[in-house]
Amino acid sequence: MQGIAIYPGSFDPITNGHVGLIRRGLEIFDRLVVAVASNRVKDALFDVDERLEMIREAVNGDPRVEVTSFTGLLVDYARSRNVRVVIRGLRAVADFEYELQMANMNRKLYPSIETFFMMTAEDYFFVSSRNVKEVASFGGAVDALVPAGVARRLRAKLAQPPER
Ligand code: PNS
Image (cartoon, rainbow, N blue to C red):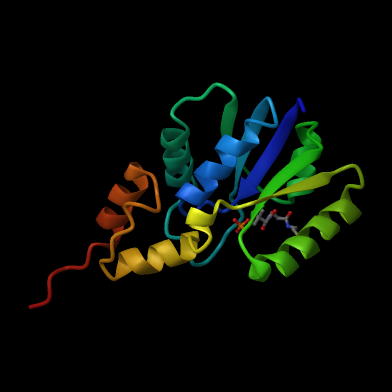
């Protein structure tokens, strides 16, 4: 297959699961737009610029990957970029309902959009941005789960002051 797809998400922060999906997406599509949703979220740990920087580091300047952000509806952004394909990773049954709703809502809003789902590699089935943040916040090791720059930033941001 050829063409371009959007890979949207919160990426707060990007994990190795996301990186694997980008790599596999590039075996199917010529180019990917990795798009960080910059709508206000109360409990975001990293601001949008930090998230973009971590993604750019993780894709290591691959010219096939554009790393950007959008506000508002994904379908409006996709339409403005003239892109019809969205890719999303599916980890488990728990993701399914949310993803099904989102894909159907997006199709209702923009009938020519198509969502492609890829199963997350089994090594990262249990990895989410949320649980990586939780583990890191309690001092657990996340180095095997996220790119090196993300692990470093998590440590810097979540380092607990030593108890007295
Ligand atoms: O990584 P996430 O948090 O699962 O990604 C969700 C995301 C950002 C893809 C989704 O919330 C989104 O597209 N937000 C933009 C607003 C929008 O279009 N909402 C309608 C979807 S039903």
